Image (cartoon, rainbow, N blue to C red; front, top):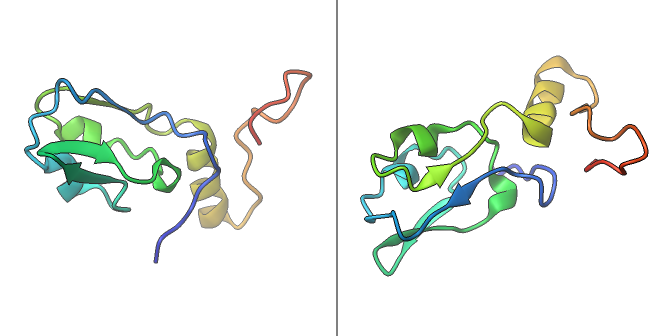
Length: 99
């Protein structure tokens, strides 16, 4: 089952010029966010990213960056685990927030 998180809020980035296509990021991603195209990793669906950081920690070439445990994806997971509404502390104030 694929879980979509909040749209357009993931911190996941990929520097394709550093990628060698080893595929480790694909092996460790629990939601198939990444795939290979032309022997390079690519982000298939960024909205599936839960920001766990497994891809970045397992990339030996530092081609992937993600701020794990922050943002709305973490809030959604915490909400699922605790049975509460997600709260990523970005919806308040006059800045508009992301939620």
